[in-house]
Image (cartoon, rainbow, N blue to C red):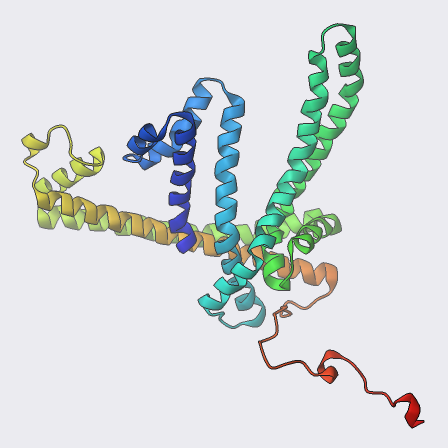
Length: 342
């Protein structure tokens, strides 16, 4: 739930910093009045101006911030799901957050390593293609020679991208179930993909079907709650109250025809209450969706680990509890007789 609630502020923060760099602090502060349009504005502006590089940089910047955020909250969620599915017990949220803090770098590093493995060949291909900018015959010859390399690098990027699309989700469950690091997460991702990609995709689609059914039912209930609540509000409080609150919500503040509507202080309070309830119900649905996805991914990982490595589903690596100083016997040392005692 916390991760879902923090995602929107992180997107706004990324957009704010982008506006500070491109338009200045005053324009950035002014845009905060309309958060959604504020986040979308750089995308729209770059697209309309045909600035593809600026668009890609903005998307990459926002994705980086989200990866950093979900490296923490996602780690806690994956740990909760792993303990629940593997051991059949409930992990304390505080313990899951401590686990996420301890493995935050590994969770983030695994995702970034996979994406860098895709982007680096493409960057190298672009650098090779830049030889075509060299004037004269030299540039043409170098570009002609580099076409094969460019095609090979593009093929490498495509293969890695397809593996990431099919098995990239395994990095989170790996760290959560194995108490491991980014290297183990990346290596298991490619190992399980190589061990049988059709099986991996089939299990993922099977679990995705369960997620889709569950979240669709939850969404239907959420929409019904919102619709019935709005109908009850209209019937009970009157259409005038609903009209004035709707005008405030539509204008995200004071509407242009405020005097004609006869807006009062209570209308703003009602509008804020409606917005909070609406946002809360949507956030609960999104949190439920995220939890279902995390559980499905963890379940697929546990099944793949059993099929590939032969480890039981209920095996879960945990750090030993803090205790007293370790004795030589517990560390594995065996006492032997001294040489002089023979």
